[in-house]
Length: 105
Image (cartoon, rainbow, N blue to C red):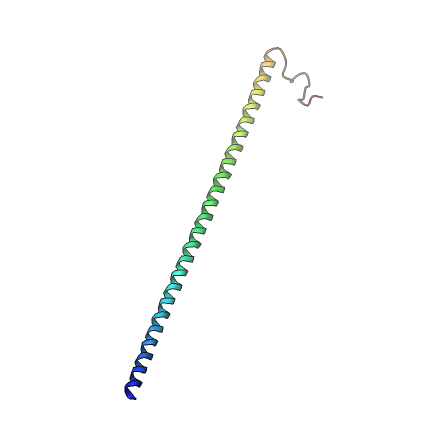
């Protein structure tokens, strides 16, 4: 009887050891899943940073287009001024003495 009791006890100890190992393996699997989730979160944060950088590049391109439009408007105003000067040289007074106020009235 004592021999059977010892074998049962040994088997119980072995089962307990195996359960402990299984719990440790499960904890390790959970840690690995958590590391994987963190890697995925980091990838998503990086994708978001890249999207923000792209939005900023687009805003900068738009600002540059606006600056170019403004430069073109300025060039056009300059051409208009040059045409006005030519008109003055051709005999007009540029509206200075005639009372012309540029409003067409």
